[in-house]
Length: 74
Image 1 (spheres, one colour):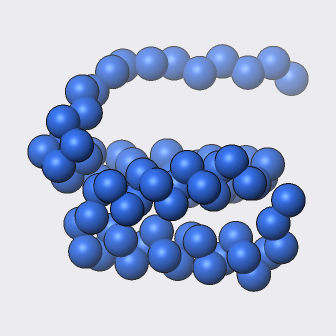
Image 2: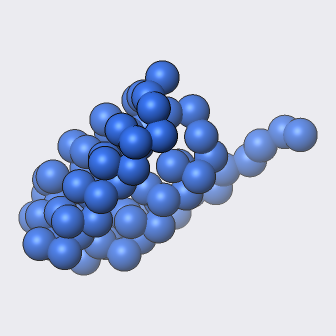
């Protein structure tokens, strides 16, 4: 588990990578954040980041768009 300052530092580095349009750095840092964090806010942050970087991820990494649905039980 990460401390809040470590999480915020990772989020900041992801935002910097987004500003540079560096898709591989965004994906790598988001994987690190999600592997170490169990907070739903971090998942949504990464999901929104990926949605905003859709074109860069496609062109730089060759990723394909998949239409998926997530279902959760309460």
